[in-house]
Length: 157
Figure 1 (cartoon, helix red, strand yellow):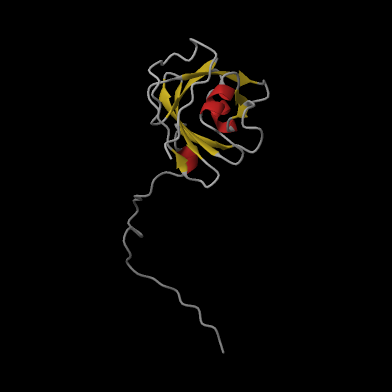
Figure 2 (figure 1 turned 60 degrees about the vertical axis):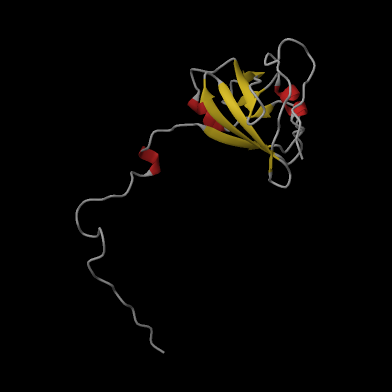
């Protein structure tokens, strides 16, 4: 059976009009980093490496610390020192362990970050089933530097 080739010509929408309504290719769009995630593949309590694009984006304006706020867990901010290793990598360092313990972060979990401005990152935690964990806190103290105790947010389920 012989194969035939069809060529379609016609007056489809937007074709041949000389103008394009398509957005510019991604390489020409400005890089805006607002949201990113990490997957916890190793010990959940040790420093966590953030995506390379984040450290590249912050090149020249590296913060010494960031403030983590668990989404839906009240106003408490967790102070976490940021480590840049000189090799283009950025880590959540001192303070991450307390946050991870309080939120039960474990192996295989997915942690989503959203930059809110002023070095504040809102965090959503997804467990090993890839379902979001919701937290609440009855703690009125929003200053995590007032003591060394971990004050856990409680998963209501």
